[in-house]
Amino acid sequence: EKNKAIPTSLSSMDDCAVCPPPPPNCMTVHTIDFFRSFISDPFVFGRISAVHSLSDCHAMGAIPQTALALAVAPYAVSESITEDTLIAMLSGASDALFEEDCALAGGHTCEGAELSLGFAVNGYLPANFKGFLKNGGKVGNKIV
Image (cartoon, rainbow, N blue to C red; front, side, top):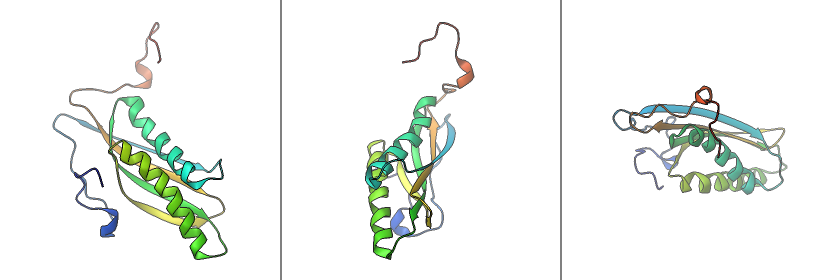
């Protein structure tokens, strides 16, 4: 795990993630996204889902810190197929989170009608920065 600030890890099997507070004068941000798969490759879908979830933090100017996953694998003929699907999906997601120094701090998995994945991402706004809010735009501002 790249983010050493998280004292618990997926291997600890704890029911909650223990995370440090943000740096002084920073505000925390919380966001959640969840999608049904729209492609057949679970690895690529996992990556897309994580990147999209992280993008909410980026849009606000926040630094992502931790993520909790909610993963749904389709009902399968065997447990090994379900496990392989979850491993592929979460591997793609983990790669994207790792690149952003955002720790996958835990989550929940289950079986359902279709492949789905979502993340609750927690982060923080840099000190004394109020963030980019949707209602803060003014006539003449440019969106890049």
